[in-house]
Image 1: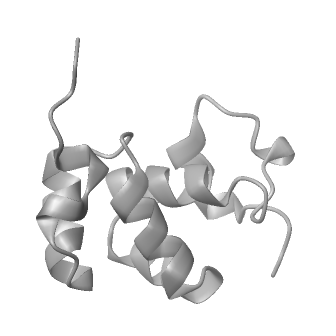
Image 2: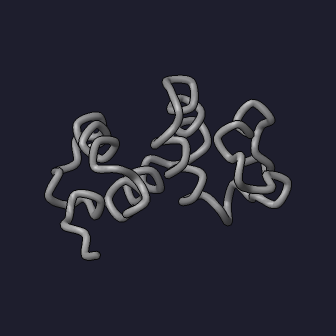
Length: 92
């Protein structure tokens, strides 16, 4: 696996120095951001660069993705919505 993010994905990380991102160490952050903001091309890139286990784990445990995104990917990956952290009630 390459260690740096491809330049064409930099637009999704406008608030981050992408030179400091590691595809391994920052996998959850990268997957969350691209699932939330990306398109079909980014989803294809995620599926090529990360294991299905890493992606499913991120979808299930992330509170950074929106319920709308969680709902879509629960259908896409066949994950029960009830098991998604983003679907659970948030406390203010």
